Length: 150
Image (tube, rainbow, N blue to C red; front, top):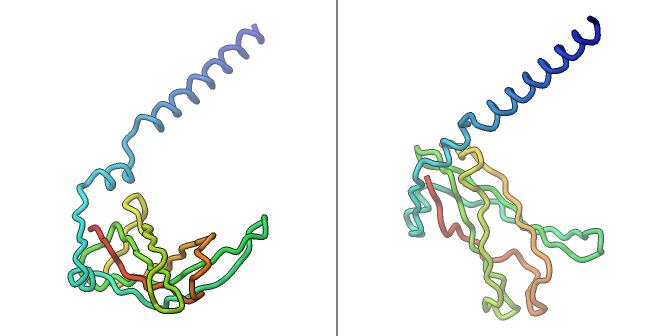
């Protein structure tokens, strides 16, 4: 009698856990719904400036475990519009000692799957780079916001 009761309790516990996993896996989440809303993208530089401001650009040097140099470019993005910004992409131009661009790089610093940048809010970003060209002048790259989405 006691053995049968243990089997029933274990079976019921397993059924409850399986049901909870199914509900969790199949239930639509708010994050998936937000990312399924179409994104309006803007790539015009003049229009982008009415939405986001880029400030406090800096560069720092670090090393990874293999003792390779890593350059960390950081700064702030501020939403100066009245709409939440859901995506932002930066374009960086690394220059040589004559000021000519020798390496261009683009990276999203705010992705549509992240929490949007609300009006008047700031976001601190970091972009890591290794293996930059030898002719680079070791200064903060020329950085601009190349694309946004709301």
